[in-house]
Length: 219
Image (tube, rainbow, N blue to C red; front, side, top):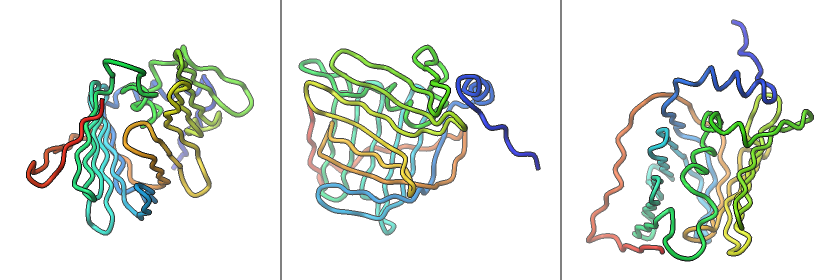
């Protein structure tokens, strides 16, 4: 069987975008992960689902028990912590004060490089090792880098210079490390593997029993 062509640089990015133009959703099932959260460390399996321009959904399971579930839409974030029975909600675009270091489009671009296909005007090819995407805004540094050969995500950095809030990630030998402090508290996750599939529809339930959970709205 012939190997798939290796996409290289901006020209490869254009080829990849044509190849994947029909993809409207993707799901990564059972990626292996180490999650550090609230001073605890968990070995977990992560499922990540994204429907283009609609929703991002994450479920984190430890020992058969879901410990965290989250969804992101254009206007809101909702996080269900099964461990401490708390539901956190927040508008993604804040009415007052400084914005978060990321918006929905930023987060969607991190899920897969297919979501960068409409953003090629923000990209530059240094012809040595990386294709760089720059989405900088006032007060907020927004950069991500793809390996030039294969266009694999290598790192990203979303940092608010005024508030110190951040979402960052980098590729390591043992997986991809993501760390953040911009919504609830500091967390870190290192994930690898998982099975990919495209254009599936899954059921997403973000409701909980209100008698068993506390609700915290972050402004």
